[in-house]
Image (tube, rainbow, N blue to C red; front, side, top):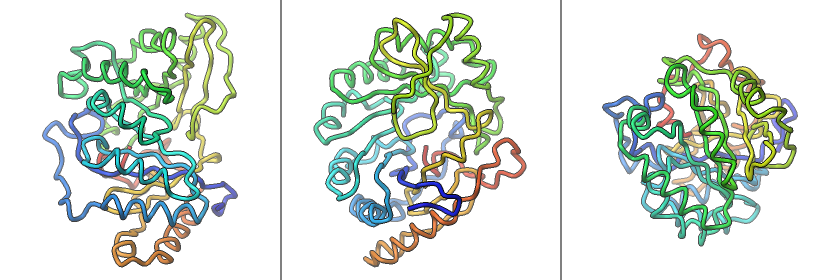
Length: 322
């Protein structure tokens, strides 16, 4: 299905929980947030039904997010359920990696198509400072366990000024000997992210070019998002950039979002949402599909991250979905 600006919308990011086992400083307050009652959260069967109706509108790719999706009981089962939905061609996962070692084999067996791991630093102490927990070794072990299976792997890095912006070279080096992509993601002014100074991806790209020489653009398809990828000679993987602020990519946007309580979000920048929870709980499949179509047609021309005062979404990312 196309939206009012001619964009094909074939990708849905689904938050399956607001719970998380970390307290990343740009995502969640150190004291945590008010957790949603479980009865307000969509069941696995409800999520699957929404995806079944979404596939009828042309949604082909699903990303499972949170909070931290692997803390949700049944996350791996859900992935298996979604893989059986007619029309759904790809199911992927974004995780902080803390529980990845525990579930790596099962995720592969359920048919997971790709996994993204959030990792902002390779410094153990700095990791604890950023996330609030001493879990760096668990994440690295999870990455190594996931590498045992033929599932594409990406490392997501959010640079923040004065915290980890000096680790661009060390993090990029992960792609030298590992068949994974390292992606730098500009900090978005959503929730607590408004309190941090973003680092332009152009700044990092220029440093990489000075250090490694000319980077060759890689035009192969690496995923569903707007990342621009480059290959460094001698590296097994690539380096990618998602530049929401300094490389606005709204003209190519192909997604909608579904929160854990059943709210469809046409755009991350704005608070506007459409709830499908009542319709799916009343087993009104046609109404669910109509609401999904409404959300697609409600997508704005673009976000307003370059003008933070125009951003109306005030919730923490954990409540929206990564």
